[in-house]
Image (tube, rainbow, N blue to C red):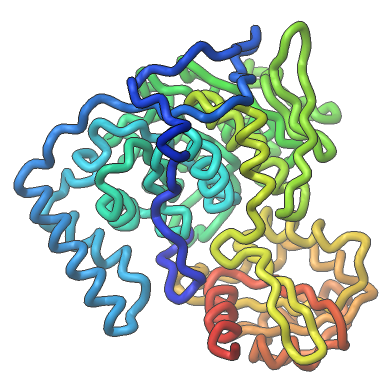
Length: 466
């Protein structure tokens, strides 16, 4: 879950299109180069792909949208938050069909999964902005009320790129009938809210298989998402090189053991790793080409292999919507901050990089980003509703990787974290206040890893401190 943005750096819900001179306003694209694998390789000026003329909103929906905007403004003026979710909630109360009606006539892409939704949504929004204006919720409000708010804020945008909480995805997909669906990964996350991961996979599989005229972009290295997309009519398989195996030791379809051989995997029931169409590999994007695959250097400003994986998924999805690969990659290189993620804050004597992690798979990938460094680490954990009250997941995170470096346990659940660090034999001190913890670290660079509300609160405090 990525709940409403309360105080995180605010981002617009729309990605602007190219200048008028670069648009093909006739509604049809000029001749484009497509290789045998289907990748759009044109690198000239981007063109806008106009959807069918949108019908006027029904009166009930128009009233609901107006009420939502008023409520959102009131919420912001009273300091209750960004106002997106409460506005969307009001709209859905007044018109339960508002989501589908606001998507009617738009080209819609949905992004879902346990980790990487917000980053991939921003990447995809940025890439397809070459085709036209984009309405998006890339600040993280990913439940139906947040989606409605994002769409209502940009009623004229011909393209919508929406991050969707995996628990709500089936209902959302059935309402909006997307053109493209991006399936990132699936692992345990907030079991007290989302439920068991195999139940989520079954629900995704059911709806994805029935989506007509939809291209599914799926991570073939993730057993759960491969199972969800395996029977879909049209699938683009992407190898991300990122694999969390703890939740897929057995097949989600038959329960038999999943057999792994280096990067490949299979089950006796027939479920197996498909051959990828696209891949992220050691800083490069491998793209379908003629006569064989082509390689583009990613050179992203965002750190880590996990963001190279997100970029591969986003670029493949953007290409499926008509965006040229080279231009998409160039646009992604300019991204440096995603709703506060990877933000660098300056404190007296310290430069702190803020990293967000919310579940065992996400924490594992984030800890990998620290390999090869010896900077002090502040680990901040809260246990509020948006984080999940159950902190048993701490025992599935390989905190042993922090051996040999200064570590400070922070956040509202710093003592719970300290117990886990003690069993991991990681030397640490406890400083519940995250900003204070940064100030007490050794002078120089500091890495800060925090779960959702701890991360959000730290961003707010850091902004106020300046």
